[in-house]
Structures are given as C-alpha cells and as structure tokens.
Length: 380
Image: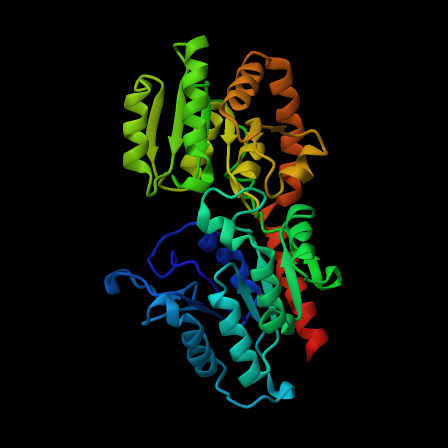
C-alpha cells in the first residue's frame, strides 16, 4: 500500500490520529509506504513504524510536492513502465486544494499504472468559509478543472460522510457513481468510554486553535453566557496559530476566571478523561470532514453542540446532537438551554453512546482495508 498524505505528524514523531489509524491498518498489508511533505527538522524525522510502515518526507518545498510524489513513488514501486499486469501496489491519496497530492498521484499513475483512490476527508471552505483562502478553495470551477485534468483517472473517490461531502462533489462535477462512503472515524472504545468523574467544566472545546474551528465565535458566546453564570467554566484543549491572540481576547473580554487553556493533551486517555469531566462538548467549526472529536465525546457520554458540518447532518437526523449556528447569540442560547436541562443531556448521552459503538476502531479500519483491496481486485 502506497499512501500519499499531507500529514507531516508521523515524520515529526507525533502520535496523533494518523498514527492511531496505522497502529491497526498496517496489519492488513505486507508493506505500507507513506509519502508526505517536508518536515522542518531533520532531527524529528521518523522513517519506520510498526516494522512494515515506511515514511518518505519530501526534501523539497511544498510547491514541488507533485514531482517528489512522482520520483519517490517510482522508486518505491521500482518501475517506470505502465504495465498494469505487473503492478502489485495500490495507492490511496488524501486530497484537498491546492491538489498537490492528486496531481502527483496522476503523474505517478501515468508513469506506472498504479491504481489509486482519492480521499476527500474535508472540503475546506464548505459549507462555510472562514476566510478568503477557503472561499477560493471551495470554488466549484477550481474543482471542476482539477477533476477533468487530474482527478478522473482515480479508481474511486472516498467520502467520509454521507451527505455534505457528496453534495459538494456532485456540484463540482464528480460523478456520484465514482463515490464510495468509507467512514474515517476509528474510535477506541477501550479508551473513549464513560468514566465516573465529577463534572469540573461546563463546556469543553478540543481542536486546533485556527480560524476555521470557529474558536472566536465560541469566546463571544462565552462572554454572553458569563452574564448569566459567573461560575461558568470552559476548557480549551489544543493549540495553534491563534493561541496568543485568543489569550489576549480572553483578557479583553474579562474571561480569565472562566476560560482555561489546557494546551495539547499528551495522549488519547487524557482527552477521554477531560471529556468525562465536562458537561458538554462544543464544536463551532466552519467546515470539517468528521470530526473525530465528536464521536470521541459521544463515546465518553458527553453531549455535543456542533455546527452543521461534516458528519453532523447525518447525526442530526438521528437526533443525537444539537446543531448550533455560526452565531454567538445562538451558541450561547443553546448552550445555556442544554446546561439547564439535565434530562435532555441524559437523552443525548444515551443516543451518542449508541452511535459511537458503530465506529469501533478495529472494525472500521478492517472495513477500510477490505474496501481498498476490493478496488485493487477490480483494477488488476
């Protein structure tokens, strides 16, 4: 298996979501090679995991990533001849604008005939853009050009939710019959589970502190909630480019006694513990593919308030979460309502636990590997 990814975390030695997936996924393949962008420090570079996973970070700038994928891919495949009968690799490509990975995969297919699946985990800028760059990235004309020139040779297009991403891709000219739904939520139910901790926090946010996560909206909502409850406690788990400005914003809004910046959690058990100590998870993102954090909260028995992104339309139909608007007034109102309604929180807890069980890690990763092998069989 050859995986083309934009995730540098493995090469940097971080044990995040990608590591968590590979911990199980690698068992289904003789060898897994991962091509990813350049990492900043040579000292952090990791080249092997689990015995059969090999990581190939680029030595070149991101602009040249398609050519690194071609060059390194040919070296891994040990071929420059397009002879389908000799191909014993399959390629999966994590794709998003500006399409470095998909362009590189298309070049590699042209030279080697290795079949590949495009994976769209997240449509940046859809359903709502957080900034101008996201508006450009969500332009359907850009996507139509990409699909016509580079994307259409893919064996299939993986989508990780059933409504939002397929809706966008159809508008962008990608045929519905090429799409296959394969969830990317792999929840370790031995880690993420209800625990008997007292509730220390009213709200918890878990994620990168970036514009598209809607964190500024959350703080505006917290400022409104504080008017009703001076004792309100909000835990922020994560870090990012906005860390310094958000801490300044907390001071300007006089929320120092209400907002606690935890920073990055050291591992998944710590995240699970913090979720269990919180009454509600709040996710005000502008766009997402999942996100995983919602399923993790559900598995912990923590009710969820979330914007209508990624998998949320799927869950909202099952009445398992509460949808919030991209509006501080609405977020504050619905958070206050749910904090005051213990019966509704208990109902959401039970509904969420039932849904989370459907995304058990080992079963979902086996499903992913089996689907990829089906595509290999179709093409070989």
